[in-house]
Length: 463
Image 1 (cartoon, one colour):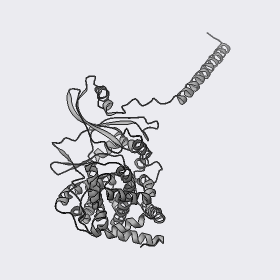
Image 2 (cartoon, helix red, strand yellow):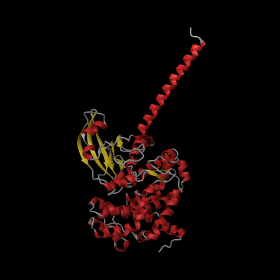
Image 3 (cartoon, helix red, strand yellow):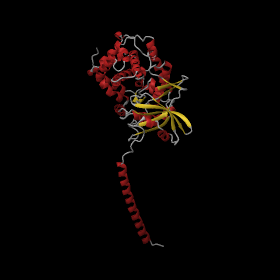
Image 4 (spheres, one colour):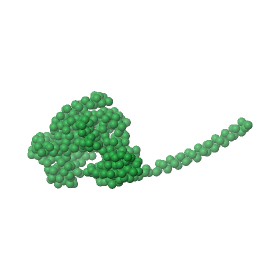
């Protein structure tokens, strides 16, 4: 049996060995950590062209099926930021319809989308918010696959691919924005939007996610439009000149600006155009745009509006809540939604910027009804009554006015790029109808009086 002295000596030797082993292990870990820190993330290996994104090899990766194949492909008209294809895919013993979406091949369009973080916003809606949206009955497409070149945990990206389910035509129909939405489908959409706003009110963890709100605590919907507001004084007269000339498409000569004495007839949709248009005095609202187009007026007025919006309660804003991004069920009982590249944070009323161009004056004339429907759905939703109490209708209407003004001021600047080149009949017709719809809607909800009052508060003379 070892003596106490021998056991002590053995323990010392064992500890010394352990100490040396720990030192060697620590050095190895430090070296490994240094290697890990200098290794670049793997380069994006996903598709950059629709031919790649709709090929059998890609779908075999998406569905983890070596026999998956695309049996039918239909490319949609390219959007400003993305290219999209509808595909029929045989995979895992069944046939499904999917939508594949990748960034535009146009470097300028893609750079704009990256600056606006549009691609990451949409990917993150499907990868991080999909379950929450399903839980509140906010219908979106089935999610199948996403990949990107993000190096910051999907907060930002450029190249990416998204694969989602297609809405079946025997169940759903798109709300064609050119034709315009009817009141019933619009009210259904409004009620769904109320559920979305209620769910994310005061959810700072979701609202301050880097992909949604890069600067925590702010209203990120404002940051998207600010650069376009700055460009408005130069863009506004230039765009009106292009429209008047018909150089991009002769249809633009039908813009409401060029009606006799601005009284009409103004064209608000295909059926309305066939019926002879709508007579409505747009003189006061055009005067508002002429006023805001003055360089010394534009940004001081915009900044005063930013301050109002920044004082309001925050929730998630859809940001692009318009007809072409909505589907209605054929039974007329429900709605579904796509295209989340402008998801952001802001007050509820600001989400009503784009819809005003999605329907004509017969729907807009019932704005008190759909605002009441919104608040009814808001109060019925979990967390919604608290938001309704913190956000009275007066604030909702004021924010809707601001949103309509700031959206249209921004879209004029954005539209200069669109109409500086030939445009399709569909695109030109949409703008002709939408601008008339916006102008009439903005007059109906009191935008003229609001601008005059705000100018007076800022000490800016109104003509």
